[in-house]
Image (cartoon, rainbow, N blue to C red; front, side):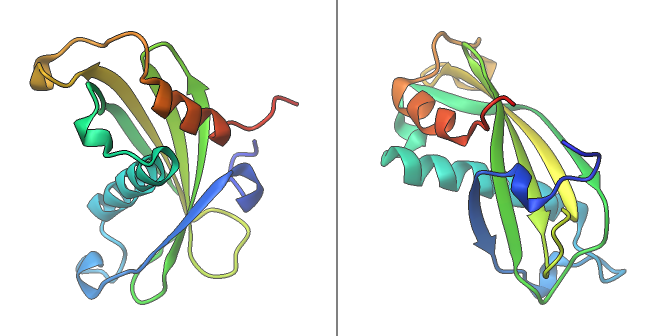
Length: 149
């Protein structure tokens, strides 16, 4: 992977519509909106790929870590294409990368890192990680991994 990711770095895609309110006072996409897009890309994929309500599983993925590298400005009114790839599937965690693209550029405008840790759904936010990741989720996310060169 180069320092600035390209469309070829991602496996699955989703498009989001930008809204007027997504921009900050400077006319740029608000940084909090980037994180909403990352969350949407990951969870929409999980819903579609598993065919289940992931919030109702006995084990749920909670966000343990997020980050974003910003490369260029994006904002309203153009749609944003979100590329998704999984870097690692562990015993109780999954590491995703989400590239945001706007317009025809092959290079990402931003890239997020998003880590889900799976916990027992009956114990709430203070729950400890569980082993293993639910089979239905594992089967869906391994399809997002790129083959090792």
